[in-house]
Image 1 (cartoon, helix red, strand yellow):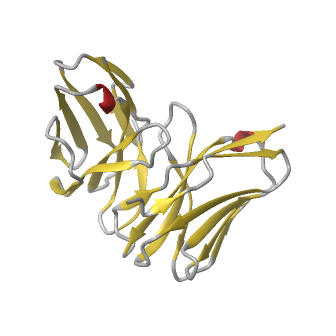
Image 2 (tube, helix red, strand yellow):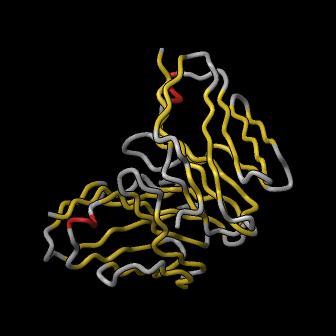
Length: 112
Length: 112
């Protein structure tokens, strides 16, 4: 059973607008969450993280929001740029340990 | 060389072949992982090594055999694979006890 779900396989956004990528999880013990970005023919690269003691973490154009009661996190990219076009994976772990569960990814296309 | 390096980048093998995937990390990490990425599926954790010891085997068929001779090197030996094993195989490393992964670029495996 999938513990981390990304229900939107793809998202298309106009350049300059906000991109919102969503992720849901089922394990209430998860306490550390990551977003990764993946370009074709490359491995995923770390983007931003959040621990369960926070509900928001911001890094430049990227903000991750965590709603523990809903077991939901989202990644906001604003303003979106064509170079942001990639597949985005969310991942979660328990006790901030090093075993992460990944979602199936959302392919973001930012149109110029 | 920096980061996590995987070789080969692409591999085509017959079902009766034996081949090996190699991963090397230059980050001083002490945990290494093999993940499998199939189309439209979450990244599936296959094996975890902490301090060269295998700590996780996620019900992976025996036709996949990992080897971790030291904290910097990880191999995945392949034998009598099936066409459904065709996927992107990603290696990652991290520090035991916390933090996210650094991924390699992956090996695109095709079994014919």
